[in-house]
Amino acid sequence: MKSLLSAILKLSSVVVVVTFFISSCTEQSFIDDPKVGDVYQIERRNVVPESEISYQLVKVRELKGDSLLLMPNRMYYHEKVYCIAAGDYFNTKASYYSTKQDIEKMFADGDIVEVFRLYEKSCLGHDK
Image: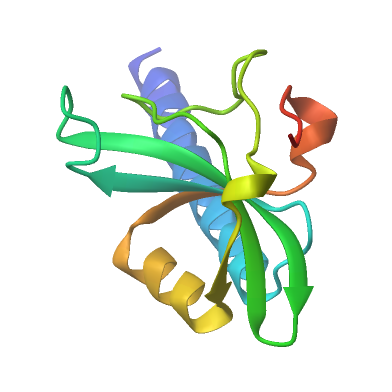
């Protein structure tokens, strides 16, 4: 019985490592080949007075050559978020340009902590 339990625990550990590896590879491919509608979760430091670390979602609005037009959501969160609140939205008026190289560096440096593709199909969140 102990050997069966040990085997199950080892298998579970392997599954977690493989899942993490696949997720990391998928996110890297999204960074390498951005698409309109991709959403980046960005970790920011010292933006919100009550929190040393905050998170913001930013959506790719447009691609032109090596430039990405990004739309931030209007809120900063105190923890990672996966769907923005119903009253929140991506702010088209606050859009700004970034380069693919900037995005790649932010991901490599750990500032982009998560990348979502097909975000609107699974979450609330609209452009305003």
